[in-house]
Image (cartoon, rainbow, N blue to C red; front, top):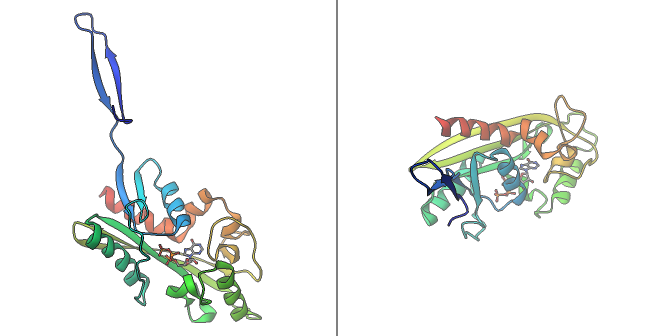
Amino acid sequence: MSSAEIWHFNSAPETLYLKPFTFPKMKKLVFATNNQHKTDEIRAALENKYEVLNLEDIGCLVDIPETADTFEGNATLKSSYVVEHFNLDCFADDSGLEVEALNNEPGVYSARYSGSRDSLENIQMVLAKLDGNPNRKARFKTVISLMQDGKNHIFEGTIEGTIRTALSGSKGFGYDPVFQPNGYEITFAEMDMAEKNKISHRAIALKKMLAFLKG
Ligand code: ITT
């Protein structure tokens, strides 16, 4: 008996028999990422709606090259890779931080801005480049590519904010400790995941994708 299946009694007076009752299985969605924090955020946001499988879950152990110079290009490279090699519909996001005073850097280079994948080094690079600059405006941006039945659907989300002069908070990932969203006195790294998931760039893009999937 599968775990999604239970048996219940139908005790009508004329018959007594066991009838299988099956809970509707949750739909599966493949999310082409190796980033566990992103997987956790998306799983929390899609809780009870979809079962989210990431690259590790489907046995895809490669770091898919992100060689495009736009978020949309990189998101599409990741989603297309899964379609080509695994024949599964899937979505991928490419996200990053754009700092106004740095000509929107680090942008698509957010993951390795300092030359390494170390978040602290990347943050320090941004803080050093902004040192003494009064313009602290920045935004996080996400572009999702959803490959479904051979078609590419694009969804975008942004959140505006400012870059603090020092790190604050230990939640989240990446540049969260220095990013303060407009209208808040705390950084993303000081927010619970549920709160970040209400307002974040990724959450906004995801809501658009969900509305499309509900269609
Ligand atoms: P995948 O490509 O495997 O999904 P990644 O970490 O490379 O994982 P992205 O290319 O989308 O993810 O993001 C690039 C970087 O942008 C990421 O490593 C973080 O440093 C930063 N970033 C993206 N979203 C963020 C968020 O919500 N909070 C803080 N930093 C974020």
